[in-house]
Image (cartoon, rainbow, N blue to C red; front, side, top):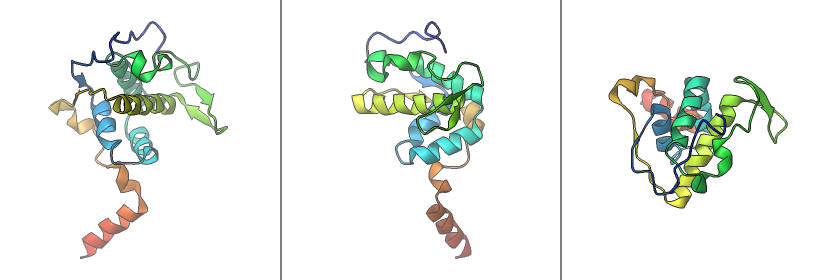
Length: 151
């Protein structure tokens, strides 16, 4: 996404139209009861890099820069479509990981600012959603499920 690809709405309250994107709906729903680490693992393991990029572009059309920051609307990470950039930890991160981080950070900023956006997931896209909930990756949850099956 370049600076000219996405034009943020002028008004932070200009989120009247619903956002239709399966990935965004899943992330927004799960981020309220899962750790970011588990959410990232499920999304990165299930959705393609292209789907993550399109989700970021879709979100950029529905949220104001005054809410999420101007950097969300520019290409600031990685130089090629599948390029890697050095993260603060010193590890190389794939572009889709960074775009997913941008999406999660933007949604957290929207939540903090009290901006409400309605996310729609069309019925014909329900099969695109992961069947795994992020909290299912926790070993405690796994053991609880095993105990329940044994009972």
